[in-house]
Image 1 (spheres, one colour):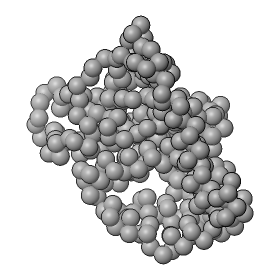
Image 2 (image 1 turned 90 degrees about the vertical axis):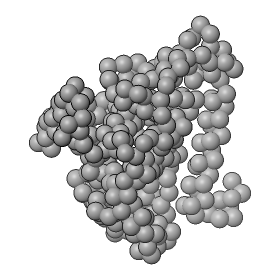
Image 3 (image 1 turned 90 degrees about the horizontal axis):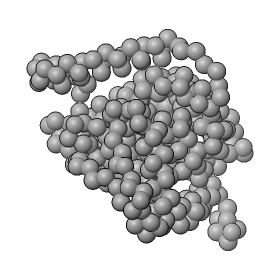
Length: 304
């Protein structure tokens, strides 16, 4: 309260949102019984996904201060051998997993960092540590879905409207400012440059002036989503300086579009883009099966 009285601006509001969210979640992390239930539920949500591995909790041995689960061998996703890491495949799996949690299931692993994510010897993505899990309301998922799909279409008007609906752009912000911000962020996301060059663009006066001169803030619900985006970008750029998350994430989201929309109560028919994304995914899976089955030949680099 006193912070807002002394410095009443969107940046202080954003800081307060982060602190309040931390305060709300820290107590939950102290009860391993709750974490065990989250782990069980999320494990069930991915029970048919062959690319994901989640340890099974031994509920009979779990108490408030003790949790017992499977031991899984794996390598942290930031410690992989750069010579063999298939970055695009790893990132595509990360995107699919977090899109399903955020937009389809509404039960979100809210502590995404390399220590909680490993790659198993068989190539599956391992998820660990479910002490911080957030349930995402249907209405938030619906708004976020509209915004993400607009950004993928490179539609700044739809993206700006989504920012406003989500509370990123406050009601007092002019439409021209919101639109310009959306244009700059979309332009930066699709730019064919290195991560450092894209960061330089974001830090340029034209972007930072927009961010600091107008009431733009990150609501509590979206703090974790921003962390996930930063994680994916960080993993990709660690192994490839020219890595771009959007071109890899877009086909994944489009392939899941109908499933996402139906999960938030929106009737949907597959689009041409969605059909193309599904076809590309199927071809990629088939190609990887050939490589896994017949060894490392000329196709071994596919997907990199």
